[in-house]
Length: 332
Picture 1 (cartoon, helix red, strand yellow):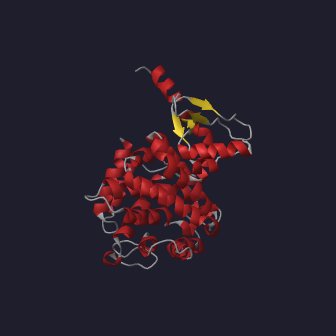
Picture 2 (picture 1 turned 135 degrees about the horizontal axis):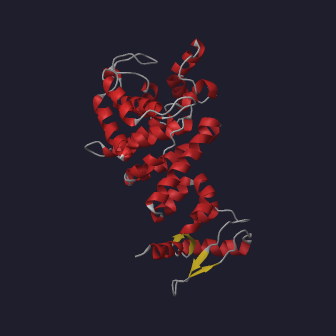
Picture 3 (picture 1 turned 90 degrees about the vertical axis):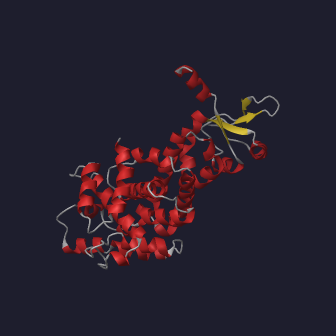
């Protein structure tokens, strides 16, 4: 089939709209047309006009037709709905993600995670953590069900350093290690505990000024102390939410500990570290090295892996090997 025919088929493809999806779409100035599928002949007819308000009577009829599976939008209009979908990602995942092309779904997941993570890293944990928890849990369940999405998401990660971008790096790379490099796939609840630790291990840095976070050298003694305290601060902040397991919280506290006891905040050695804490530490170090900062270029993957291998007294070599299988494939 030629490119023109493929394009025409895409233009004529439709995505079903459920009752819950319709509820999250704006009713005053919906930027797209909704279509009703005729149950008798399968034809699609536009029932709304882009930019025009949907009146109360029409809303009721549309909701009824949503429940019957008769309301759709064009796939080519999904981009116009993205701002509303990203704010309600768990609903989108649960209701219509199975209808999305995988590449478009990978983009939606990353952008939705970024929107949600930005609210807790740059605004308020207290106000937004429940929504973030629901979003990451829904994404985690989907990745556990469809691990191949991780290979699509890895090249899309933003390498410009920020706490939010680093959280996404840690989470997606770590998810790849968990789902693609181990002999047995972890159970869903264990996997989700792990990605919460990976995404949130640096949340304790969110109250530090950007100029401190952007420094690599020349930190004052007070700045060094505050940065080295962030695993404890992360634990304290997240403990107040009562939403994370002890396994996740322990790994977050341990992510700067090292097997030889040279890490912080407690200086414990390998036998007193959890496997998840070691994974978070390795992934976090890799992300820090391979992300760019002002005045510092990102380090190539091969060089970063070599450094981690050479620090075999600090990092578990088996974890670094698993990390290589995920990140080196990304470069191919």
